[in-house]
Length: 137
Image (cartoon, rainbow, N blue to C red; front, side, top):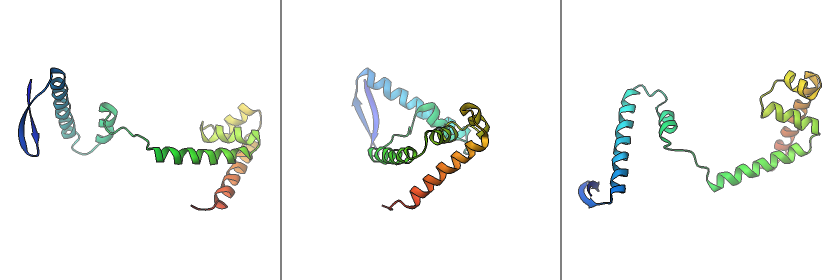
């Protein structure tokens, strides 16, 4: 099949296979649908998030450098947590990662919400001391 494409401002006729033609045709339809959708969102409401969610355009991909930094930071955080008692670590992770309240954690751990609060404050102090005394790179 012959397809006309714009290359550096000039129309060029190119011979392509049926599969390539169908792909280009679908891409044209998607581009047209997105431009219609953009006009519907003239006030800018959530347009970027809508495109990402529905078309998968611009999906975040972590670079190797970002991955390495994230893993180093995770290692440092886990090293700090290793200095805590098992109860402090468990209570802190339930609070920080699961978003549970002091009372909910107290019910799970079989202790009062005040001892949960004290544990979390102690872990925060350990983290604060670690990051304040850490040499800056």
